[in-house]
Image (cartoon, rainbow, N blue to C red; front, side, top):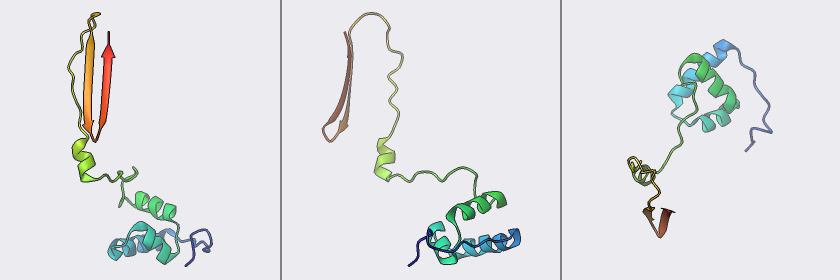
Amino acid sequence: MQTMQTMKRRRLSADAWSAMLEKFEASGQSEEAFCQQERVSLASLRRWRTKSGSEPAKKPPVKRAKAELEAASFVDLGRLPMRSGQLEVRLDFGGGVVLQLSRS
């Protein structure tokens, strides 16, 4: 199996890229697998997808585990008093992870 570094590069015209994008969409493959099979650069495929409007210009979102997404939430502490009194905040994240902030 050849890696992208050892493969000979292919230069394609705009029409050829249009056909390549149609083939990619119909393939059901990941971008990486398709590029390996067709011997085209992943960066080029992404650039042409962006140009054609079939892919947003932004990078794909980072995939996160469902449990991580459910656990990630904002904790609104409201407006904290600025007076010189003592303030203590303790966050227990579970699994033995505790964040404790104190102001004396």
